[in-house]
Image (cartoon, rainbow, N blue to C red; front, top):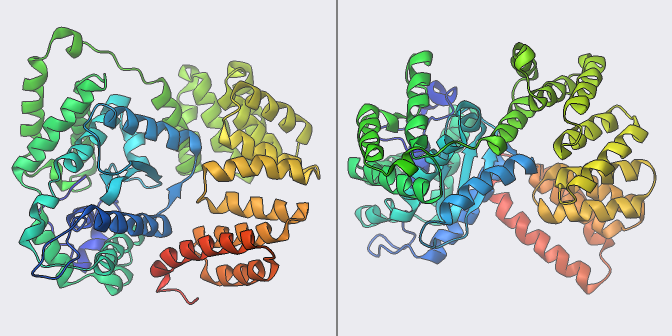
Length: 488
């Protein structure tokens, strides 16, 4: 999402932090800033790739990303469906989900796309989520930022990353001093002043987004539905809590109006498309049950009463399982979910995860094996089954399962730590310390990185080991830029 006509002064950060939407325009205003001298305005694909990699590392270091493969694969599937009908992009698209209540999404440099959990939770249909993402991808494909590069002074990649760090830290932590200390100031203000989107840019992103939405087979009303949901949220919350781009350049009412006019001119077979929300509702349930306040989630699912589906019953069980005070209630809820939807691999996996947590290993093993038979590619089921094998003392078999998970989700601190511990128990000391170092990197823990890295270096024996160490140190080099506020 883009914000216009808004200067991200330090005092504004704290006021807007609760909405999760403080200064995103500034973030994306600087994405295509040139890196050459002030008299040579060039910003080629190599520059954008470098900025994108560092920007992605920054977001992963400072934002609460979720690594739930069911949710991430779902969102990636929506994006892939949209870009599959667009002209080829300059970069592969990488999708991540940020655990934040903001009703927002954004496309960063070099194809890095981020979606807030608040957007998933507040939309009613997948087509609405797809509409927002189609709009964002429209800005990317039309290169609206790049067109304004020549109007401003050059900034280095390092300066740009610093500006991004200041914006992200200020708005996500609510700590204006921390954000300002990193990179707020005249360069940030200048970047915003030169590169804000125009009325025509927003209109074009709407139209291009609508083209993609239609070509991908979605009901065209999705983008309008998203706008109307955000308008309702603005009224309910007293205004100011949704991206201001929805009320400026052009106004929200005007945008809804011209999109409705366009839809009315479409053939009936396109206008009358139906929503298919099966996958969307699964992802939405997981986000609510696992990543929102557990008491609020329990209350939401219980209020459904007799209208609760098998999926809702699973959501209640997951929410209850997050509290140690509700162990008995959680067990009962999982049993009810299994009776209702016991053939669903998601129900089997989540139930197995719970019974492993309460150390009912026999029940957990049976359920996780059933989940893997139903869906052998389920990364979460593989992870939980590997953990269970380790608790049984079968470390080599456990390591094989965790290796598959690590390959699929390479930047998850918890997975790396578990894998490292299992490798150590299996006797592979070098790779144990190697993975524990990666875990510390992805957990943004410089002190632990130093400790584990020294152990890994001492355990390295072969040329292959040293090559793996070199790759690790390259990853560490990229990450360490964002640890300037922490001692190493």
